[in-house]
Image 1: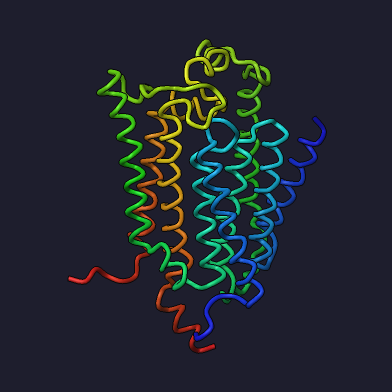
Image 2: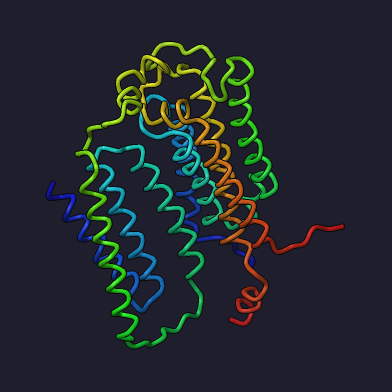
Length: 172
Length: 152
Protein backbone atom coordinates (compact mmCIF):
# COMPACT_ATOMS: atom_id res chain seq x y z
CA UNK A 1 0.00 0.00 0.00
CA UNK A 2 2.10 2.86 -1.31
CA UNK A 3 -0.52 5.59 -0.82
CA UNK A 4 -0.70 4.71 2.88
CA UNK A 5 2.97 5.49 3.35
CA UNK A 6 2.86 8.65 1.21
CA UNK A 7 0.05 10.03 3.37
CA UNK A 8 1.92 8.98 6.51
CA UNK A 9 5.00 10.96 5.41
CA UNK A 10 2.75 13.92 4.58
CA UNK A 11 1.25 13.72 8.07
CA UNK A 12 4.68 13.61 9.72
CA UNK A 13 5.84 16.64 7.72
CA UNK A 14 2.65 18.53 8.63
CA UNK A 15 3.04 17.63 12.31
CA UNK A 16 6.64 18.86 12.37
CA UNK A 17 5.50 22.04 10.61
CA UNK A 18 2.76 22.52 13.20
CA UNK A 19 5.37 22.43 15.92
CA UNK A 20 8.05 24.51 14.26
CA UNK A 21 6.15 27.21 12.34
CA UNK A 22 6.15 30.69 13.85
CA UNK A 23 2.64 31.89 13.06
CA UNK A 24 0.08 30.34 15.40
CA UNK A 25 -2.75 30.28 12.82
CA UNK A 26 -0.54 28.48 10.28
CA UNK A 27 0.33 26.00 12.99
CA UNK A 28 -3.38 25.29 13.60
CA UNK A 29 -3.93 24.79 9.87
CA UNK A 30 -0.97 22.39 9.69
CA UNK A 31 -2.59 20.47 12.55
CA UNK A 32 -5.76 20.29 10.46
CA UNK A 33 -3.74 18.81 7.61
CA UNK A 34 -2.61 16.04 9.97
CA UNK A 35 -6.24 15.30 10.80
CA UNK A 36 -7.36 15.24 7.18
CA UNK A 37 -4.46 12.92 6.38
CA UNK A 38 -5.64 10.61 9.16
CA UNK A 39 -9.13 10.64 7.61
CA UNK A 40 -7.65 9.53 4.27
CA UNK A 41 -5.70 6.80 6.06
CA UNK A 42 -8.90 5.46 7.61
CA UNK A 43 -10.59 5.50 4.20
CA UNK A 44 -7.70 3.57 2.63
CA UNK A 45 -7.81 1.05 5.48
CA UNK A 46 -11.57 0.64 4.76
CA UNK A 47 -12.90 2.07 8.00
CA UNK A 48 -15.53 4.58 6.79
CA UNK A 49 -17.13 4.91 10.24
CA UNK A 50 -13.87 6.09 11.73
CA UNK A 51 -13.20 8.32 8.72
CA UNK A 52 -16.53 10.15 9.11
CA UNK A 53 -16.04 10.59 12.85
CA UNK A 54 -12.44 11.73 12.44
CA UNK A 55 -13.41 14.25 9.75
CA UNK A 56 -16.24 15.89 11.69
CA UNK A 57 -14.36 15.98 15.00
CA UNK A 58 -11.35 17.44 13.18
CA UNK A 59 -13.51 20.21 11.71
CA UNK A 60 -15.04 20.95 15.11
CA UNK A 61 -11.68 21.14 16.88
CA UNK A 62 -10.24 23.26 14.06
CA UNK A 63 -13.09 25.76 14.40
CA UNK A 64 -12.55 25.97 18.15
CA UNK A 65 -8.77 26.34 17.76
CA UNK A 66 -9.09 29.01 15.06
CA UNK A 67 -11.60 30.93 17.16
CA UNK A 68 -9.16 30.70 20.05
CA UNK A 69 -6.11 31.86 18.10
CA UNK A 70 -7.43 34.48 15.63
CA UNK A 71 -7.02 38.00 16.90
CA UNK A 72 -4.78 37.08 19.79
CA UNK A 73 -1.53 38.93 20.06
CA UNK A 74 1.04 36.17 19.98
CA UNK A 75 4.64 37.10 19.52
CA UNK A 76 7.02 34.25 18.69
CA UNK A 77 9.56 33.27 21.29
CA UNK A 78 13.06 32.45 20.11
CA UNK A 79 14.57 29.41 21.75
CA UNK A 80 17.74 27.63 20.75
CA UNK A 81 18.13 23.87 20.80
CA UNK A 82 19.26 22.60 24.18
CA UNK A 83 21.49 19.66 23.31
CA UNK A 84 21.07 17.89 26.65
CA UNK A 85 17.28 17.81 26.29
CA UNK A 86 17.71 16.79 22.66
CA UNK A 87 19.85 13.79 23.63
CA UNK A 88 17.31 12.71 26.27
CA UNK A 89 14.45 13.04 23.78
CA UNK A 90 16.38 10.98 21.23
CA UNK A 91 17.02 8.29 23.85
CA UNK A 92 13.37 8.06 24.89
CA UNK A 93 12.12 8.06 21.30
CA UNK A 94 14.49 5.23 20.37
CA UNK A 95 13.43 3.16 23.41
CA UNK A 96 9.78 3.78 22.55
CA UNK A 97 10.33 2.84 18.91
CA UNK A 98 12.13 -0.38 19.91
CA UNK A 99 9.30 -1.47 22.22
CA UNK A 100 6.61 -0.57 19.70
CA UNK A 101 8.47 -2.51 17.00
CA UNK A 102 8.47 -5.58 19.25
CA UNK A 103 4.76 -5.12 19.99
CA UNK A 104 3.78 -4.63 16.35
CA UNK A 105 5.71 -7.71 15.26
CA UNK A 106 3.61 -9.71 17.76
CA UNK A 107 0.29 -8.62 16.26
CA UNK A 108 -1.74 -10.91 14.00
CA UNK A 109 -1.60 -10.00 10.31
CA UNK A 110 -3.91 -7.32 8.92
CA UNK A 111 -7.60 -8.23 8.88
CA UNK A 112 -7.37 -11.67 10.45
CA UNK A 113 -8.86 -11.94 13.94
CA UNK A 114 -7.34 -14.69 16.03
CA UNK A 115 -9.79 -14.43 18.92
CA UNK A 116 -13.03 -16.39 18.90
CA UNK A 117 -15.08 -13.38 20.04
CA UNK A 118 -14.03 -11.22 17.10
CA UNK A 119 -14.68 -13.96 14.57
CA UNK A 120 -18.14 -14.55 16.05
CA UNK A 121 -18.98 -10.83 15.81
CA UNK A 122 -18.03 -10.79 12.15
CA UNK A 123 -19.74 -14.01 11.08
CA UNK A 124 -22.87 -13.91 13.29
CA UNK A 125 -23.33 -10.18 13.94
CA UNK A 126 -25.97 -9.54 11.29
CA UNK A 127 -27.94 -12.64 12.23
CA UNK A 128 -28.04 -11.72 15.92
CA UNK A 129 -28.64 -7.98 15.77
CA UNK A 130 -30.10 -7.41 12.25
CA UNK A 131 -27.86 -4.34 12.00
CA UNK A 132 -25.92 -4.32 8.74
CA UNK A 133 -23.34 -1.83 9.98
CA UNK A 134 -21.20 -4.12 12.08
CA UNK A 135 -19.47 -1.25 13.88
CA UNK A 136 -22.80 -0.05 15.25
CA UNK A 137 -23.73 -3.61 16.14
CA UNK A 138 -20.55 -4.03 18.17
CA UNK A 139 -20.36 -0.69 19.95
CA UNK A 140 -24.08 -0.38 20.73
CA UNK A 141 -25.17 -3.98 21.22
CA UNK A 142 -22.35 -6.38 22.08
CA UNK A 143 -20.27 -3.73 23.82
CA UNK A 144 -23.03 -1.36 24.95
CA UNK A 145 -21.64 -1.25 28.46
CA UNK A 146 -18.31 0.06 27.14
CA UNK A 147 -20.13 2.77 25.21
CA UNK A 148 -21.98 3.78 28.37
CA UNK A 149 -18.63 4.28 30.05
CA UNK A 150 -17.41 6.31 27.08
CA UNK A 151 -20.55 8.46 27.25
CA UNK A 152 -19.83 9.01 30.95
CA UNK A 153 -16.32 10.20 30.09
CA UNK A 154 -17.74 12.69 27.58
CA UNK A 155 -20.36 13.85 30.09
CA UNK A 156 -17.71 14.41 32.73
CA UNK A 157 -15.52 16.38 30.33
CA UNK A 158 -18.43 18.60 29.25
CA UNK A 159 -19.33 19.24 32.88
CA UNK A 160 -15.70 20.10 33.59
CA UNK A 161 -15.32 22.49 30.65
CA UNK A 162 -18.59 24.29 31.31
CA UNK A 163 -17.87 24.54 35.04
CA UNK A 164 -14.36 25.93 34.53
CA UNK A 165 -15.11 28.31 31.65
CA UNK A 166 -18.52 29.54 32.83
CA UNK A 167 -18.24 33.23 33.45
CA UNK A 168 -21.39 34.40 35.08
CA UNK A 169 -22.03 33.15 38.55
CA UNK A 170 -25.43 31.74 39.40
CA UNK A 171 -27.80 34.36 40.77
CA UNK A 172 -28.83 33.67 44.30
CA UNK B 1 -21.08 45.74 17.99
CA UNK B 2 -24.20 46.67 15.96
CA UNK B 3 -23.68 44.26 13.08
CA UNK B 4 -23.19 40.78 14.50
CA UNK B 5 -21.63 37.93 12.59
CA UNK B 6 -20.12 37.82 9.12
CA UNK B 7 -20.92 39.54 5.80
CA UNK B 8 -24.17 39.43 3.85
CA UNK B 9 -22.93 36.76 1.43
CA UNK B 10 -22.04 34.40 4.25
CA UNK B 11 -25.42 34.97 5.87
CA UNK B 12 -27.38 34.24 2.67
CA UNK B 13 -25.40 31.07 1.98
CA UNK B 14 -25.74 29.97 5.60
CA UNK B 15 -29.52 30.33 5.45
CA UNK B 16 -29.56 27.81 2.61
CA UNK B 17 -26.94 25.35 3.82
CA UNK B 18 -27.51 25.17 7.56
CA UNK B 19 -30.75 23.21 7.33
CA UNK B 20 -29.16 20.81 4.83
CA UNK B 21 -26.28 20.16 7.23
CA UNK B 22 -28.75 19.55 10.05
CA UNK B 23 -30.75 17.16 7.87
CA UNK B 24 -27.59 15.30 6.86
CA UNK B 25 -26.72 14.87 10.54
CA UNK B 26 -30.17 13.43 11.25
CA UNK B 27 -29.77 11.08 8.27
CA UNK B 28 -26.38 9.87 9.53
CA UNK B 29 -27.86 9.23 12.98
CA UNK B 30 -30.96 7.38 11.82
CA UNK B 31 -29.05 5.22 9.31
CA UNK B 32 -26.25 4.44 11.76
CA UNK B 33 -27.16 0.77 11.92
CA UNK B 34 -27.38 0.39 8.12
CA UNK B 35 -24.55 2.44 6.66
CA UNK B 36 -21.33 3.99 7.99
CA UNK B 37 -21.83 6.72 10.52
CA UNK B 38 -23.79 6.49 13.71
CA UNK B 39 -24.70 8.45 16.76
CA UNK B 40 -21.33 10.02 17.44
CA UNK B 41 -20.61 11.28 13.91
CA UNK B 42 -24.21 12.38 13.32
CA UNK B 43 -24.32 14.17 16.65
CA UNK B 44 -21.16 16.09 15.81
CA UNK B 45 -22.64 17.08 12.41
CA UNK B 46 -25.80 18.37 14.13
CA UNK B 47 -23.62 20.33 16.56
CA UNK B 48 -21.66 21.70 13.59
CA UNK B 49 -24.86 23.02 12.01
CA UNK B 50 -25.56 25.07 15.13
CA UNK B 51 -21.91 26.17 15.27
CA UNK B 52 -22.32 27.28 11.64
CA UNK B 53 -25.19 29.51 12.81
CA UNK B 54 -23.08 30.94 15.63
CA UNK B 55 -20.21 31.75 13.28
CA UNK B 56 -22.35 33.36 10.60
CA UNK B 57 -24.98 35.22 12.60
CA UNK B 58 -23.32 35.83 15.94
CA UNK B 59 -24.24 34.23 19.20
CA UNK B 60 -27.60 35.93 19.86
CA UNK B 61 -29.38 34.44 16.84
CA UNK B 62 -28.00 30.97 17.45
CA UNK B 63 -28.52 30.92 21.20
CA UNK B 64 -32.16 31.88 20.58
CA UNK B 65 -32.54 28.58 18.70
CA UNK B 66 -30.64 26.48 21.22
CA UNK B 67 -29.53 28.13 24.43
CA UNK B 68 -26.68 26.85 26.53
CA UNK B 69 -29.06 25.71 29.27
CA UNK B 70 -31.19 23.81 26.74
CA UNK B 71 -28.06 22.17 25.35
CA UNK B 72 -27.03 20.92 28.76
CA UNK B 73 -30.56 19.63 29.43
CA UNK B 74 -30.58 17.77 26.09
CA UNK B 75 -27.17 16.31 26.86
CA UNK B 76 -28.28 15.01 30.24
CA UNK B 77 -31.48 13.61 28.70
CA UNK B 78 -29.41 11.78 26.08
CA UNK B 79 -27.25 10.24 28.77
CA UNK B 80 -30.30 9.17 30.79
CA UNK B 81 -31.97 7.80 27.65
CA UNK B 82 -28.94 5.64 26.83
CA UNK B 83 -28.73 4.43 30.41
CA UNK B 84 -32.47 3.67 30.31
CA UNK B 85 -31.93 1.48 27.24
CA UNK B 86 -29.41 -0.49 29.27
CA UNK B 87 -31.84 -0.78 32.18
CA UNK B 88 -34.59 -1.90 29.80
CA UNK B 89 -32.36 -4.79 28.81
CA UNK B 90 -31.67 -5.54 32.48
CA UNK B 91 -35.33 -5.66 33.50
CA UNK B 92 -36.88 -7.16 30.36
CA UNK B 93 -34.10 -9.53 29.31
CA UNK B 94 -32.12 -10.16 32.48
CA UNK B 95 -28.79 -8.80 31.15
CA UNK B 96 -27.63 -5.17 31.13
CA UNK B 97 -27.79 -3.79 27.55
CA UNK B 98 -29.29 -6.94 26.00
CA UNK B 99 -31.26 -6.17 22.87
CA UNK B 100 -34.86 -7.05 23.76
CA UNK B 101 -36.76 -4.88 21.28
CA UNK B 102 -38.16 -6.43 18.04
CA UNK B 103 -35.38 -6.57 15.48
CA UNK B 104 -37.19 -6.34 12.13
CA UNK B 105 -35.56 -7.18 8.82
CA UNK B 106 -31.96 -6.28 8.02
CA UNK B 107 -31.58 -3.14 5.81
CA UNK B 108 -34.91 -1.72 7.06
CA UNK B 109 -34.79 1.69 8.71
CA UNK B 110 -36.70 0.45 11.77
CA UNK B 111 -34.67 -2.64 12.45
CA UNK B 112 -32.06 -3.93 14.88
CA UNK B 113 -34.03 -3.11 18.03
CA UNK B 114 -32.26 -0.95 20.56
CA UNK B 115 -29.32 0.00 18.29
CA UNK B 116 -31.42 2.66 16.52
CA UNK B 117 -32.57 4.12 19.86
CA UNK B 118 -29.02 4.02 21.22
CA UNK B 119 -27.80 5.95 18.17
CA UNK B 120 -30.42 8.64 18.81
CA UNK B 121 -29.44 8.84 22.49
CA UNK B 122 -25.72 9.08 21.70
CA UNK B 123 -26.43 11.76 19.08
CA UNK B 124 -28.41 13.86 21.58
CA UNK B 125 -25.61 13.49 24.10
CA UNK B 126 -22.67 14.14 21.78
CA UNK B 127 -24.29 16.91 19.75
CA UNK B 128 -25.54 18.94 22.70
CA UNK B 129 -22.38 18.29 24.71
CA UNK B 130 -20.00 19.45 21.99
CA UNK B 131 -22.18 22.48 21.26
CA UNK B 132 -22.01 23.38 24.94
CA UNK B 133 -18.22 23.00 24.87
CA UNK B 134 -18.03 25.23 21.77
CA UNK B 135 -20.21 27.88 23.39
CA UNK B 136 -18.13 27.76 26.56
CA UNK B 137 -14.74 27.82 24.81
CA UNK B 138 -15.24 30.03 21.77
CA UNK B 139 -18.17 32.38 22.34
CA UNK B 140 -18.22 33.25 26.01
CA UNK B 141 -14.95 35.17 26.14
CA UNK B 142 -13.33 36.07 29.39
CA UNK B 143 -13.77 39.73 30.39
CA UNK B 144 -10.11 40.58 29.71
CA UNK B 145 -10.73 39.93 26.01
CA UNK B 146 -13.74 42.21 25.94
CA UNK B 147 -11.58 45.00 27.30
CA UNK B 148 -9.03 44.33 24.57
CA UNK B 149 -11.71 44.48 21.89
CA UNK B 150 -13.00 47.83 23.05
CA UNK B 151 -9.50 49.29 23.05
CA UNK B 152 -8.95 48.31 19.42
